[in-house]
Image (cartoon, rainbow, N blue to C red):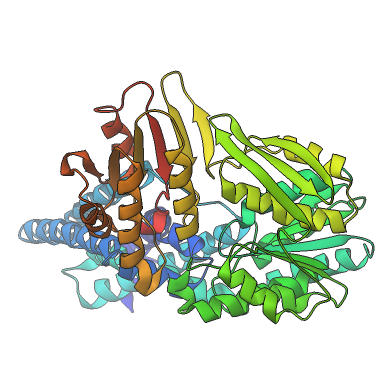
Length: 538
């Protein structure tokens, strides 16, 4: 092909343009990279997001391509009529301009969980750059040689292909990622094998995992040196990182949160950690969209119990039907339902926290914690049941309870000069929503709820959001429904309870909702931010 002649200026222009386009498309892929990361690098979850968003972001990329192509082809036609084909490349200015504007707008958009620049994401970015640059060069070569009228304008096609390039490049890298995770897994297992006296605890459930993890860590720290998986490190790569980077040689206990979206996920985590004891916080419909059935959720959570040794301790939530079902199936000698050895009474709470009496045997102790809600008392009892088995005294347990701090965005009470704010934006379960509304009902002043509703509930999603609307109607004076995803279902629930239409507001996103609050919130109001939508639904 003449195009590849070293004396051909178009060859060098094509190389430069391909490199520039590779860089631009990596930036333009931000939303798609973010979604594949939020989907746990599962292609299935990525395409569920595309489907649930009705191909909104794919359509934007297609429109970017069409607009750019129209401008480039128009410019080509204009300059070709004057016989100077080189001038036709000026049309690419429109393509780069529109693409840069698109990228700036993409990065300025509000994000609940921004893209994390992990090593895996960096590898994906590099692979994406190389793939797009090579593809761009190949397309330019073909169009220049055989479709002279289009020439470099073929670049305008690339944005429309980006949504499909991202999962393709991700799939290409899967063997490499498996090799890397295997390497880190072997390193973590070797480290754990050299710590035979380390007490390893796994926590799983459909809800309450993170809060229970923090509670257990605080109480156990009154006697032991504890390593806790930070943040939401609850996947195989995350727990490998915890063991390799956070666990210290003199740590006595390792607490791991175990998350899952597919049957077998917990088993993989247990193969790494080999937990000695486990806690089931509760089973619900969270992530039903991925599991397809409650039975699959039960089966997956039970993988933790099945992995425990015969002398292991398994603690189950006595107030949850799914957890009690797993308790009945459990064959361990040391299986315990919460509230078996620990009783509580006199539960009360206000804007400063929760107070209750802890009864263990014949001893009673008055406990006070900054945590809000009866569900947190249930989580505390789960942890106390295990702490007693691990040798903590009642005094150490009570001291630990007093030191508990709210987990950010999980029914966290924030006091301002004029209002109370209940930030429950990181809770997204049916059970958690009910608890948050119950807490709100006990607060003083006018009550306002800001929520986009519940997601990832599969076929139950509409019904559960309708029920959520009914619960809100019985508690809140005003409600702001964020986004369109669950607006119809929540409003139907509100209407069933004859809720005043004038007190129902809608906002396209959380930022807009916060601005809307300024129009009607007054001093003394209590505002509950509940179930903020993950970026997958924005």
